[in-house]
Amino acid sequence: MAFNNVGPLTSLNPGQTAFWWYVRNGGQDFGTQFASADVKTPNLGGVHLASDQRKEKDNNGHTTYFVNITNQGPGPAFHNLQGGGMT
Image 1: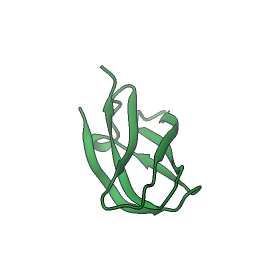
Image 2: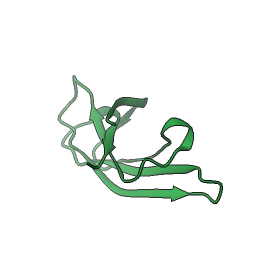
Image 3: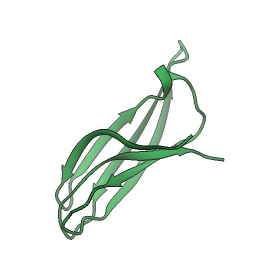
Image 4: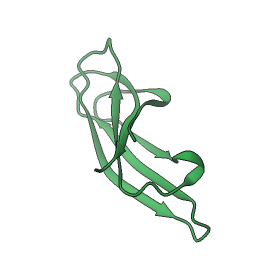
């Protein structure tokens, strides 16, 4: 199931990285998930790279997903998250 426009708007200048974590439906395990930057307009040409996708599953079954978003420039831009599962 895809998701868009998740989380607070975050501004990144070129070279900055935002570290995100998210849960799906109360921490259920949705298998492999991919998140990327939902880049907003207008912006000044920021290109946002999603990297270091990670997944943590606690012993109680609660699942948390993680991703880093880095602005490769040339200008700043706002983003939040979008993504979904692998099919």
